[in-house]
Length: 489
Ligand SMILES: [Zn+2]
Image (cartoon, rainbow, N blue to C red):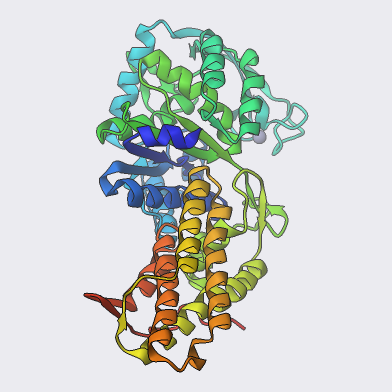
């Protein structure tokens, strides 16, 4: 299904969720960015650099940001600037190749939110109504029902919440129940994985109109409602539009583009049900796929500030290097489910799969090749060619169905095949030079293909291997390089 659709699309637009700036992102957030990065790099290679646009960024408005800034003693602007920059550095540490780092405080985004609001308003989909807000005096902020534990603020369980009635704008979400059901049923790839799609379909009938503004006195830090400066646009009606801002601006929100939103399962409902309704209301095309992934746990526990077990991507990269962390996140998690990581597990995978597996195969092949000088680049044996082609096919199919775990797994099967090939053919024991050259060329072909297949997953490692294989006309020579992955004790 996905493959059919993709072949018709000339361009691909991939987005991640934008992260809330009350704190710097941790490894759980970065996981999603790496996944989106791999898909972007995969499609860039397949369709061409300019056919793919990859967006990530920060969600910077709202009460909690204001509150966090106040606690830090900074102005809100200075506070969000610092977190946005820190988030960007965390993504850069993992070599995430976003085309734009969107900030919802960017002027072009604010302009489009205004235009979008007006379009939806003109459709009769925004109206003033009574909002019963639950206000915690302890936190000095409104709480949503989902934030409460036994009907009370989890931080102030002894205090009664105050019910505060405000006049706010509502979005006529309920009007789109039938439209949404038809869209999801009619487009099997609209919400993935399938279990999430069923979850979303089960919620369609429960959709009620939703508040999309707050009084300025309650939430000061936000985009004013066009034509009513006593109100500020609230959360999703600002944040979700970021995808459209960058998409329209760069020519990636048209019918030639396959639009893929990648997000955590906690954001599923907003992306799969609210966002399409908003787009339909304002008269823009809908995304093709909303993919909701599972969460990462660390040593079996949720990664959270209150548990004190936050790990930043940059800390892990400092310890292991960028590619080993990317490798672990891609190979040892299942995107559709929750997965557990630990520093010990990363270290084990590093030694077993990178120092031994890939590193060892590359070193053996390069050492054999270097001894031989110039190797004529003739046809690879049928056995090797078949294995390479089969691996490429698996890799494409798996990557394009969001199964990055099996996509990376396929490359490691090819590496194992290469190891097996050295062990069976024993090139060091072959006496005839021609036969020896032929076997070593087979090995070089395997290594060269492994390097090219690694581009989306381990870009730095791929480049290092490629640099050590030197093509000159119809022959190649090899140059041993640094040890790719020094063993860790
Ligand atoms: Zn509270």
